[in-house]
Image (cartoon, rainbow, N blue to C red; front, side, top):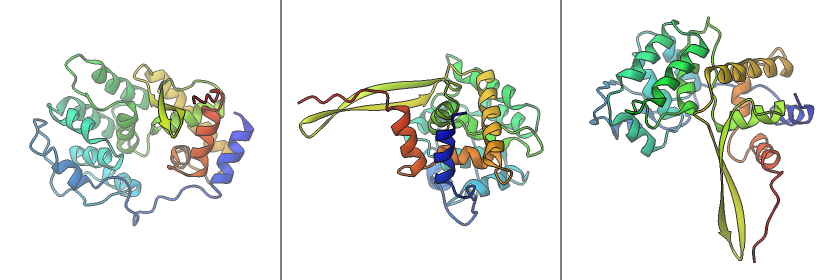
Length: 257
């Protein structure tokens, strides 16, 4: 691990992130799903919450009074899945990936096997998981896995970029795109990243182990789930700014008049 990055992460998080059940996060599951309720997915979700958050989702996933489909829809809404990807996902039968989700929830799959099963569906030509890549199906793994199990953690673009930065190597394979945007009289280079579909179950396992290792380094008051949340950070927050500056800092600044 690279200590200067750990120092910034710790300075940005004086205490571990708190999962407060009273604070709404992400999109509201009810309104999010209403937009696709009549699509061809065969998913029935009754009494979806108006708002949700991480704490609420963890409680729901551990309570069998809530159906697996209801939990999954709530997780995807919380995660802010874009409408275009939501529509692609729900325009077809959802049972293939919901069956995997149920296996995860029942404890039949460890984190590597869970990732592998979702990734196998994601790769199929008929597209049973069009619209849902690793950044979203790892959210399902995180929330659905029984708490007594070796947990899987959310692997979105910011968690992946962060863990690569801290460990100084490409533990997570990222797809990156460089584009140019006009800013006044100058051109500005913009880099966007996403977790690559080429990441394997072994890559995901190593990522989870890295999160756990970093959690131990941060101190006994930190859980791996809180560590992953700190890595994701938020737009405009100190750690996110540090990742952007350091991760893309090697790109030379080119000004075009």
